[in-house]
Length: 192
Image (cartoon, rainbow, N blue to C red; front, top):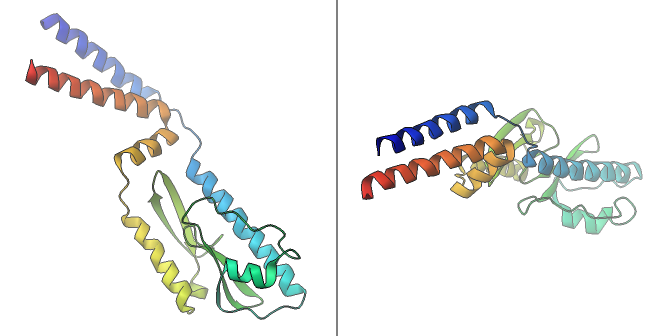
């Protein structure tokens, strides 16, 4: 019995040393989703810029992409409607004048801005950008304030595992293995 414990302790020590030395980084899938969303926002901005240069300058201060796409941007300026990368991505146009406009995502914010917030979205991590120059538009301010609700989001255990696995798969698997060994060790000592 005493030799069995030494063997188990030796395995645990080797796994801990291995976990500390095997820090392999993986591509962050949250970065890829944010990149796709910001590419959509850039396409919408370019299409709107073409529309403004053609002489159409009457936009509301705040508009949903579906409404603006159907009324103004169809075919001529934007042949294909952008597909949001997540279910919570919704696109809106914020417009002050032809020189001050931008497209806003409900989850990722603007392409760039003077303020940012980083938060967890399920198993991903995002940084959303907002701009203070549009805060006097009430609907934009409401949506910018709603970004803060994601800061208090608590991911589930499975989402946390997926998040850490995507960032560092080897260490995550080793830590999960160590946790299972610890649970097995406790179970065996209590119920045997």
